[in-house]
Image 1 (tube, rainbow, N blue to C red):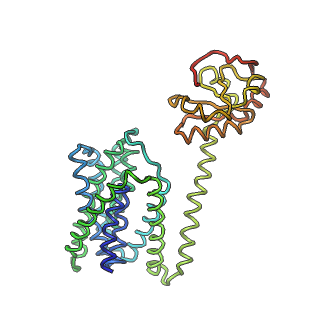
Image 2 (cartoon, rainbow, N blue to C red):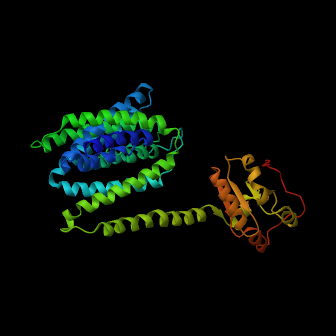
Image 3 (cartoon, one colour):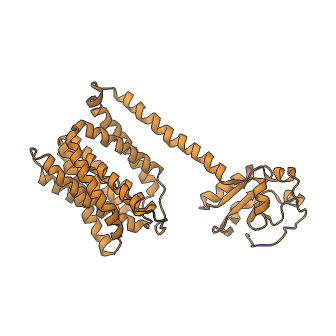
Length: 399
């Protein structure tokens, strides 16, 4: 069993090196189910281990000046306070209840990782008010103190989306914030668990193996697709979350439910959230990224309009200014279409233009809009068309 726990320590570091976050969420299960630590002691020791690995991991970023100290201040200080508060609150919760909360956080982390889109490395976002950043830091800190996770899977998106940081700065800043929060929570747990013995040799061993694992993970991270890795890791988190729920539900229910019942109770809502939400999101996005004929009549003269019908259909009647790019030839001209302006696509009814939009989105285009109803709706509204090869006023060549 000890050999498995050492392997688990290395895997914690590897996952951190591969993904930049999420590895610390493995620490508590390894300590409880492989090492055999008590629940509360495992949470406390997890904070020390996570803090040590994160602090060492932050050093290269600090040397490269890739830590945003203002974000560390506005996110990290409330996070430290929140972690201390979470550790204090843990006095009134049983170890089983804490592990139940941990399992829920683990499942939320899995959902977040599965749905996550990789932010562009150098793309900063609009900066939100600092009180929002501080509030997020406080909440994440409380979670850290209660269940012993570093919260990198929550901190990095918060720094990018709320703090407006590029990814490199967000990762470096996150590591330092995790270290500060974790050490704060661990310090409080030393008081909360003053009648239990903290195993310092185990903490130092896990930190050392975790650091080695993080270097191994970093070495291979550039050779493996991050999206696939995140989804595989999310699957592992779901399995572990189900197991931890199953082992600890008796704390609340008073009896031990079957593993099958717990699995179904978790997987059905997750499936609904993932695939149902994706379907609904796609429908809403599709509705949002379309334009009706009345709006197009105002936009056609000044925006790029691409007609994806065949050339003979285009000659029979098209909108002034439209560029003809038949769907059958669309793929070979894709690289010549500008990405820095809105694009409106039209066909006879809207079906072929929807296929062309799907191709554009796969290629990274975002400002693409389908004309609802296509040329059928345009002509039904008795709006003017041009016949032959005329295209109306020339704006910019797409092909």
